[in-house]
Image (cartoon, rainbow, N blue to C red; front, side, top):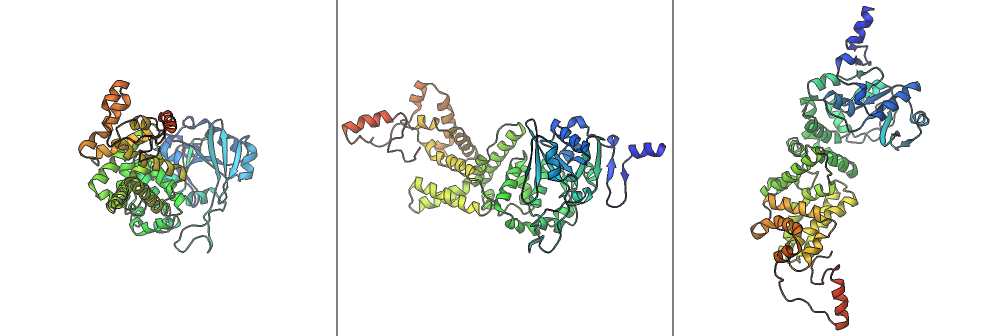
Length: 454
């Protein structure tokens, strides 16, 4: 009886390949900290005779005292065995099949234990994994995960934490360490270098020296990552709520160059560095306050000074201002697409924010009124405010954001008084009959003299 009692109270290390199991008295996680969906999915899988654990980031965050954003489940059940257990379950994925189970509005991702892929065709010439589609045991599933603190399993039924790789000890030491040989694991998936920097900044932990040491030497392998996947990781990194610290860490580990065009050069420019740091600090604040953040806006800030430099160069060569701006936007985004595949829906937002900037300088006639009605006015003004705060705009234009803030909140008479005088002669209508139509259209359409289309 005493042995059984000690076995329940004390963490135990079993034979090789078996976990060290921490009982409820050895860790702070309780089942009532899980979501309804996580509890329901694990219970139903276990009632069906399968193993089922909450796994990965949720367990890590709970051990660190952080509220998880979502819960993933790992099980020994195959996808075709999971699906019949739930009314709203969908098998997804080609490279490796997963099951998305919907419990009310909550989606729960259920994955089957996996093993490491082996064979001559498993990796490319750089060591990057090409396939990852082998089912395995729970111990094999733990060994193939990236970091020790992400390879922990929590059983809601017993409130036990199963640890195959020393993740609990690393959490207590606030240490981020790769599972296995660091060079091999980073070659298998170069995105792990970015993930290490992001997690260390987000969780307030230190990257283990053996994990960090090969990163600068292997940084060039990022070039082999598909652009769409790299965009996903960069989006997580920049919207983590710790973007300022993460960007500094990227540079310290030699990972910033090449991710965004000439970002090292931009950050070495006083105005560019100030502008980007302000943008990232504002984004971090919004994320921490659970306010909405637009990835399009953020990428517009990161690439703006490259657009600005290209635009100024084209104008110095004799190009007309507005066509030169649109050419600069296309060139920078085309260059960026070779590294990170920004989705078209974000490209549209980015271009609109950039194209609005010259229009803020037009403060005469009806143009300010029309600009206030533009659907991207708010994002454009936020961007303008960053430009003013960073010192990019000088002289009379330094207070441009304040002028627009006052204009937007002023009454009709005050707005009229704030307008600048028209410059140059106003164009007359070509015919008396057409003149009436033009006057009727003036309320909604821009005059032909407006150099920037609505």
